[in-house]
Length: 122
Image 1 (cartoon, rainbow, N blue to C red):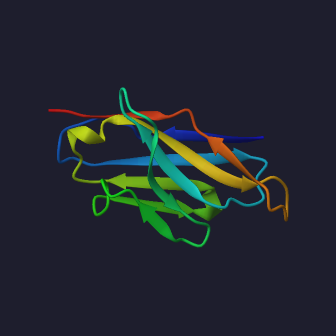
Image 2: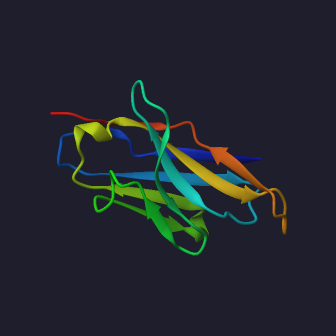
């Protein structure tokens, strides 16, 4: 019983910035990794960035140096700061969180948000 809700999407001009947020709620003891994925029209969903519970981050080559992922464990929230946006960044952005099935479990369950649309256009 975990829900993820994204916010912050919208229309922005090339070179502009947006900050996406994803808040997890429900029955949460801990969250392992949290990440952002995106799906452009006619394309498959791909990884954008991920942050572990310890704060280690990984980025897709296409966003390295422009996007920053972070998390606030006290709020069970992950953020994606997007700078220098390009038209090719246009996509629906999805939040994902990996949680243990139960306390102490090594089995991880993936939870997904419903997505938020980011459109980069002049």
